[in-house]
Image (cartoon, rainbow over all chains, first blue to last red; front, top):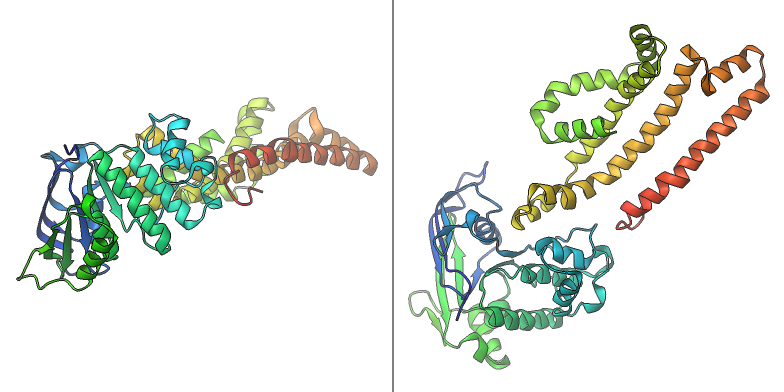
Length: 247
Length: 182
């Protein structure tokens, strides 16, 4: 039974000062509770902005964003992973976890890091961690909040392939275990092929949903061959008019 | 320090306050310390209160300026993070703002301390009946260079003791997260 909230975005307009065209106009997106949705599209199309609107980091828009009908700003905070790791450099890795989840004990924070393979780095300053390790801490921080909604902005960007594959597997397991709703932005088809139930592709300006694809095979039933096949299909998707399901 | 830090944070955060007071801050920064000392000695008499008030008036603009620059240099990225995590104002202050401000607080403390030593000595030369400044004045009247150098050496030793006994350990503790806290 899914415990993540359903998400409704109804953005009448989102405009950045100084830009002639609004980023979003009459944009609608509904996300089912407990589903994992990937946002695809070229750089600057508005993927990160959508995540920031949902997280209430950016409240300068006309429209509504609601989680299970509750305005996003009043709903429980989602777990958020920024494009950069964005760790507080003056706190240890474990304390960075506890900033997001103050109820956790130091042992809980260490356990959260251990789930992402960082058991021995709880006391480390962020500057002593590699880029990949910092991203894992950021992911652990988002997961440690035990939030029903996870928002991930290019969570595996600039990681080597093996580490990215490993993190996708770990994240897939954790999401399956918690039933969280996940919305993530990504350029990499492998992210969606491994993690997502649905891929929403944005295009144009103001951004519109150019394609809304659903995977026929559930996340849990996908093996490496299926993931590779889905990744390939996403690189060369069917024309929007022909099918909305990837088999 | 507390007064200057509070004012510095306000001026760094509120643009209209900065516009309102930046001219006065410039005046305060460049006001000759000796003028301030004489004015307060005339107004308040040759008292400790006059001395302390004059020191505050001399030091606060320096602290405000340093802290204001510190607040202006805050990373918006960490503000975003605090918003995403929905940190309460108190936790935001403790976990996000204060650590970013600490290098500037320490810099203000160090430069302020160096300024205060000098100002207090000037005040003691002007109107005190005790203290190092007063003694140096007496020694000057006898052209006793040995005595003056002895007081100067003692003064330097105290300053070095404060630097290595207090400031450096404090700096290493609160800025341990940096690659080179010194």
